[in-house]
Length: 334
Ligand code: UT7
Image 1 (spheres, protein in one colour):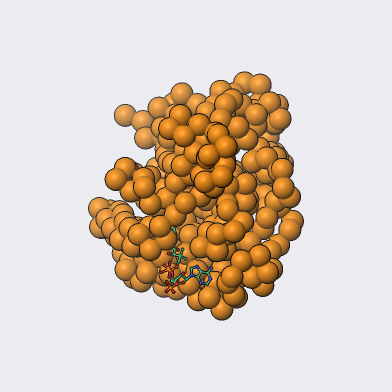
Image 2 (cartoon, rainbow, N blue to C red; image 1 turned 60 degrees about the horizontal axis):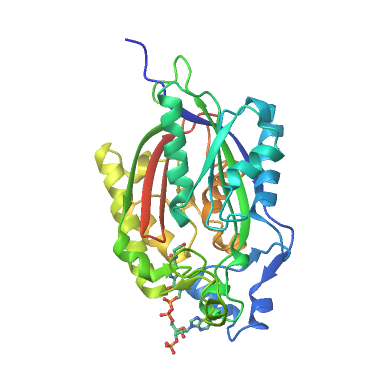
């Protein structure tokens, strides 16, 4: 029997819009202050796209960065999976728009909506096509223009979110790479959490109307404390569960890359899995919560700071609206 083919990440591309917004700038828009934001969230700055910027614009820049670094052409991509809660429009999917812009004329594709867990959902979904032998180059994109759905008058959410995009390429492991690539995953949904984090209008339940606009129903609505408590509990449970399943401890990991929603959630989970502090990737201070882009942006920081190297075991974890959640164990392959 030949070795099992796994999906390994072989390339990364990133893009954040150039405009950096400080907490002090936000304090001019709503009743808040730098100390509160830093203490409760760990966020110092975030990047905001210019008004009217579409998610596909950020995504295409990230994908172009990836294609350039990996030295391949868009026509080599076979499947595009896009994670986003801020698609350019309801349909066609943002995957279709990206496919056209990057000249991926041999690809099919679709969007996955799992909010802050989308990137991990997309990663593991894409991995199935590699493991089955069906595809050899799968593009996973995480991109969001969160500022397009944040209520500029809501101090509880405007402080949290930023805009950004990231993309990774999945390819099959090769001879001698048995234990490389995506080794395991676990995803969950708890739909009873839907009421605590959502954008209520614009869909079939509340189609756009003057009432939905006046009621500010096209913005993010979040019950922060409820989401916070669930996120801490679920991220800890999935992360420790994944390590236990593989007889690993925090010491075995090269690094821990969690969705960046709140520094306190990341720190609580890191503490629970007992991992050395310098192995915990944190970049929420500079990007805020970019929803589907947090994990690729964090991979970028991990590589750049020399904390993610070939052969390292890496644990990913995320919790998001739905509630959706997931953990992924991988051995880094480049
Ligand atoms: O990525 C998707 C998943 N999302 C998350 O994981 C987000 C999870 N939730 C959170 O990160 C936190 O709940 C928040 C950062 C959103 C809020 O932090 P908190 O420590 O849970 O604050 P809180 O909602 O309990 O509010 C505490 C106080 C309240 O005042 P009172 O009632 O104690 O007088 C709020 O009105 O802080 C007030 N407050 C603010 N004060 C200054 C809320 N937002 C602000 C603000 N500036 N921006």
